Length: 422
Ligand code: GDP
Ligand code: IMO
Ligand code: MG
Image (cartoon, rainbow, N blue to C red; front, side, top):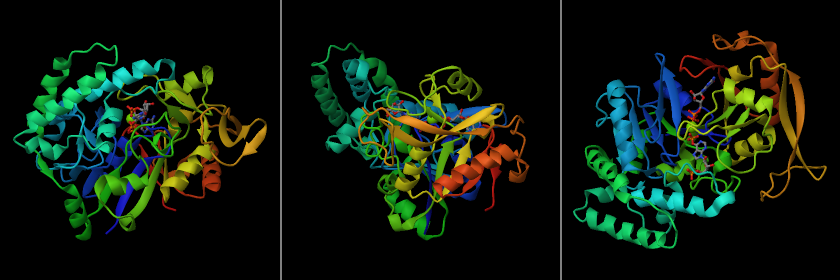
């Protein structure tokens, strides 16, 4: 039994949704393992763009089973909205979407707490998506969370009220106005909808399907540089976004992990606060943002843009045990006269060989500059037909990272994908 993992190597939004969808024909099962509706996974086909927040990106393939694993935090209101939006495209999903009974719930008050905490932080705010992620994982770790399986209990309403009262007590210490009823209606509608789905201990199902030889793809959310342990803490999300997160978030053993597909953009983006060594604040950054349509899929916020950061990429590859690299948005770099790649970091004029533990060190990126290419590459489907300058760019990344780039994405549509045999 082998489970492959597809995850982001940068600060999220690398194109995970598009590539999970593009790879789904090769898999029987697609399973999300962490995060929650802070994720926005976009995919396109038949000239239509879809954005998924909770539901795995294999959902548009009618013969695939999709699982929301125990590591995910679910907001029932978002779940309902997403299922409603998917209906015209994906039909009735109750037979091919399964929910883990162990996944924790995001309560309406988690969202309020998220907003109250961020407001209190003022200038040092994390730039959270305000979906209640931090407070929901806090309750999970604090052993006071509610889980999906609990919604089937007769006393669920009482359990809910108990938790909400605890949250309201905390909120008394914050001068923060809110109207809970606005959130609660949709939330309880979502709970009723969730009851129509199979709520089971998905770890048994995944291990059974795996041992029967079914192909399973684990879909990550966010990115390695947002990992709670290895990202730029505290400017991170609240889960383990790395390959190890797939083991804890689905209930599979590390010995059953097969390929680890690490996705990265041909440049970098970041939404929210926190260090970003190669960030471009001027015209070039603006050009990347406009050409790459770099606006958040969940919040619509403009994404910060910068050149490709190889020291950070190599770090992510190490932490994840990445076996294959997938590069997205190569098409966005078309037309740049020169392309820069960060190959090392300097602090106080001295080169450093580890990513610093704290965020208060000023990192000066050291760049290599290479010639760009002019052609529109979005129509190319054969690796050999790519411009030589792009192949040179790819070679530099592979030489630095020592992992092959086996897929190049040249546009948002599922068809705009080049599979490369190595
Ligand atoms: P995810 O969170 O990793 O799934 O990524 P997002 O969906 O948040 O952001 C990626 C954005 O880039 C989406 O708008 C995608 O449609 C788009 N996209 C993905 N791959 C490519 C690509 O190769 N080229 C271009 N131009 N856009 C892409
Ligand atoms: P996908 O799966 C990019 C960022 C937020 C913020 C920090 C913490 O689409 O790649 P949180 O809401 O978790 O409290 O926010 O993490 N963030 C993401 N950035 N893509 C995401 O998901 C993100 N999910 C959270 O902007 O800086
Ligand atoms: Mg996204």
